[in-house]
Image (tube, rainbow, N blue to C red; front, side, top):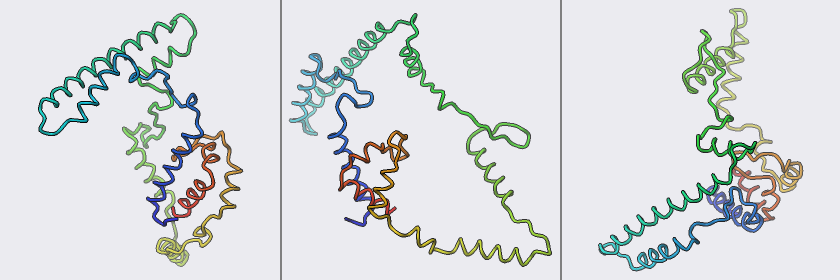
Length: 231
């Protein structure tokens, strides 16, 4: 395996996509829409005509360029018509008089409002006023933590102050760290951590589900372990 982290990450992403194609059934794809607009009888001949023109297109061929622009404009109109048609069909199936949650989900999607993403700031200044933005609140918290964690030594404890400063400066300047943290993880430790993993837990920033880790295969798991040890 290469020691290049970027190269290893690229290969690992390809492995994830390959395993996803082979393990995720078509019907279980998130937000899957069984109707594909490209297969309609209205769009197919227009797309085929555009494909033939692109195969013979050259930068100096102004006539073909004009024809392609006309086809693209026609495609936009047809797409808008199909989208409007599907929108009408969807509205006709929703009964606003019933207690159907689908209509409320539709309204929220149109309005782009989600309660879990509503702006809320519980940090206030000394005058009990809300900060205008997140940056101001973060700077205030940083100032508070800096002042609350500052050492306060009397004149009688100057020797303790000197030793404390030396310890802090030594921690900042040392690049050795804990040798235990520099030790790479073994395959046994990785498999044990995977066995203790809650598969129903939400994924982290990497977006990898617990079920996907199970389906990575031997080479995929080795690649992931290699990336973890390089990070």
